[in-house]
Image (cartoon, rainbow, N blue to C red; front, top):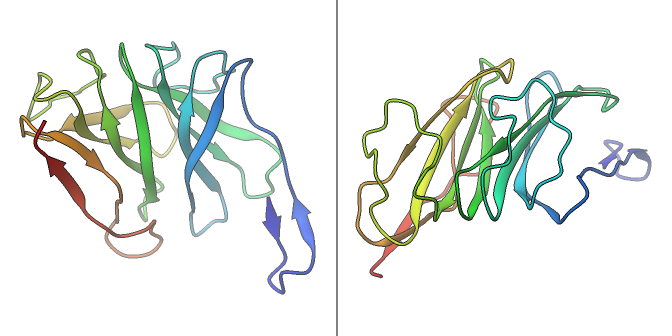
Length: 171
């Protein structure tokens, strides 16, 4: 949903989801007014210009971008491997790339040139950068054998998502 600048007028609202459970976890808006949402789902999405067109596991993440008028999806993609993967934060850089962080329990997460190719603990933090047109993604994992969860991301310069930290706990 979007409210007017004064906060007194609903400009639009919409549903999103497939035939199963879908939860939005994070949102960002770029300088052109396009809306980015990252969340989790259990399959059944209608993908559009997807970097990952196929559901991977128990719970996968999803990332979508709505045009600035909120009338059409520019891309909708799955983000995940063979088990539970949950995006926690999203930010958009000046080039329109979506930067997502979260946690993954998947042993097969869609990684590209990773610094850590194998799962290091029961839960690993992950980061993914999706190309501005949504057609490709590059991902990596944290390096610790601990249970990790990335909870915030920030890109250099405007626009940005929320800033924060990654946390690792033994286990």
